[in-house]
Length: 238
Image (cartoon, rainbow, N blue to C red):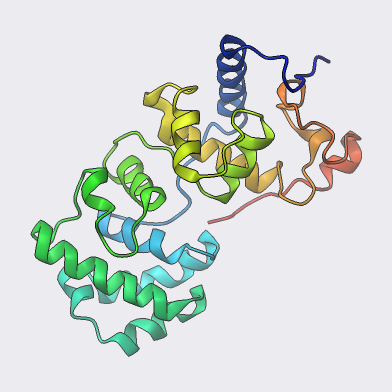
C-alpha cells in the first residue's frame, strides 16, 4: 500500500491525489447532502446560524416549531426576543443566536427587500453570517458552488496534507484550487460526512477508511480493521 510522505509531493501530484480522494468519497457517500432540514433560503440561513456549536440533529428538533411561527424575515425582525430565545434555547448560546437571527432579519428587510441575498459579498454583511454560513446558503439554497469550511472540513484537509493553513478563508482558497468548482458544494458534504463517520477528531478509524492508501495521516488512529470498524459512526446525524 503506497503512502504519501511529507515533502515528497509535487503540485501536480497533489492535485491528482486530491481528485482521486474526491472520487473515492463520492463513491463512499453517494447520498451526501446538507443534514439541516429547510424548505427555503431563509430557513437554511436561520438553521445554519443555530448550528454553531450544536449538532444538526438538535437543530432539526427545534426548527419545525421555529419555522411554523416565523415564516418571513419580517417575522424574525419583529420577534419577541424572549419567545424566540425560549424556542431555540436547547441549541446553546441562545441569546447570541437570537441576536444574530433578529439582526440578520432586520438587515434582510432593510437592505434586501426581505429576500435573502444571493451573493457572497451581500450575505457576509448580515449579522451573524460569515463565509462558512454564506457558502452553506449559496451552495444548498441557490446552487452557487461554495466550500463549507467547518471544523470537520478543516481537520480533514489538514490530515490529508492538502494544506497546512489554519485560517478558514485561506483553507477555502487552497482547497478550491484542488477541486473543480462545480463540485465544491457536494465535495464539502462528502468531507463533512467522512469527518462525522470515519475520520473522527480524537481517534480516526484508519483501518476502516477508504482513503487509507492516499492519506499521509494513516496511522493516527487504529489500523486494525476490526478495531477500526468499532469506531465507525453511523447516522442519522440529522
